[in-house]
View 1: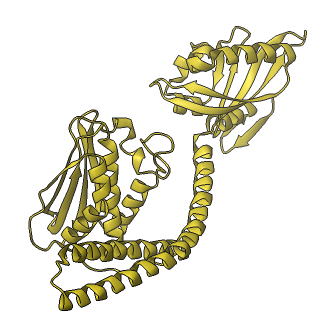
View 2: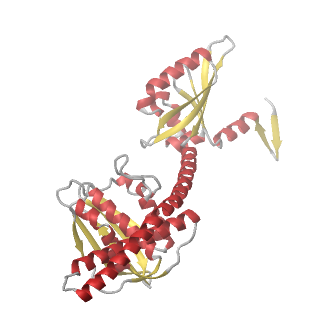
Length: 373
């Protein structure tokens, strides 16, 4: 075996190979004819959580997930028989129970007599690669949503204008009736006011869709959080009633000033209230609680707005994932998984934070922390 001299030390090819394999970004391991692991590099120890000694005392079947053992055995038998390089995807099982999706490239080594000696396998952790693939898919979907938003804006604007003009005509007619006849126009005025208010909210949403499709940043201004919550309650009134939800509004009278986008903050509250109603569907107790209280932190003043429900709750392992794009706890077809991801993005842009506390079968409470203006 050749030697390389570096300084005063002799380094063999085996030393170089061992160093390379120990720093190799993929798992490299070798098993004998019985499936016993006879070599394993540092990456295997890192991903699987076993020491080198533990791995060298294990059989290959012990590092694979139970659900893939049959396919692993069949692939191993085929590899011993043919020796061909094979590429497959499988699922490893780490010491702590974590499943690790891998792409495997394997080939066989035979001795001078042509008898099977061992396999060499290179396993690549596919989790990061799949996350990148998902990011690309999400990016494409968001691009499509932007194009759809521009189309929706065009479709909404014309009928909305007609509604507002017709409402103006109704208002003028009520003024004429009031001055010439003794007719109670109170109910009509109330309905007209609701039309104007709802139309104004739709106009805000149209502006948001336009900004989203064009990439325009919302203008920030002084915002009363209490008003934003009130407007959100008005916009979701039909949803609340349809779900049979009782609202306990503990927000006291008075301004709750912050600095931000009224449209965006209102959209956050609309989303959270809607989610709460969905979470309580079919529950015996359906109570939605709203509150805003002052809070001090690190010498700065904040408003803490809480929205809690008595719904099904969110499992612990899902509590962080629900804020990711296209992740939803709702049934297929019941949610896009965009809502909470957008909410978190909006609150971060407002230099605030959104958190949740939840207990399965007891309910969920979302807390939003915004700076006091």
